[in-house]
Length: 183
Image (cartoon, rainbow, N blue to C red):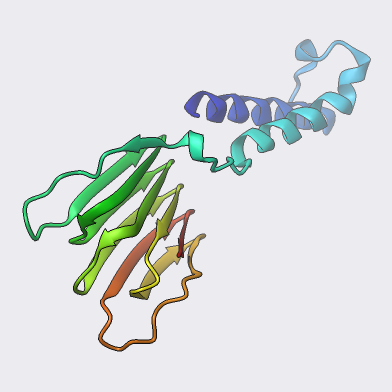
């Protein structure tokens, strides 16, 4: 992913250099000797560069590394961190005691549908240039507090209407990223 980022920056810079040469802002005749490069090459380089930089990466199941749920001391929340990749954590009957999710240029999928949630819990999210998917059981309520810049949180859950049901409090800080919560 980081190689794709630098290739994208180089292609955008080359395209802008060619446009600057065409507008007599920069003299770069030594770079462009073929006549077909006058209009086709800069447009192609800029489009291809922006496509590499800003293409939405497909979040298919096989793109995520399936990791065991991090163990924690009784009553302590788990901590899940990912940088430039994707991780998936699935609860299979374990008790959920809250989580701290930190993402930078990657993604986390947290599946709590089979987790044991008997009291109110909190998920603290710090997300920068990434994405997080959280699956919750239908037997809990979800309350979201979000501070987002160029991103957001989508709560698509159908929670229970029972007032005594446990609540998952999600506190998200997003920068150029998003969080999706669903059942």
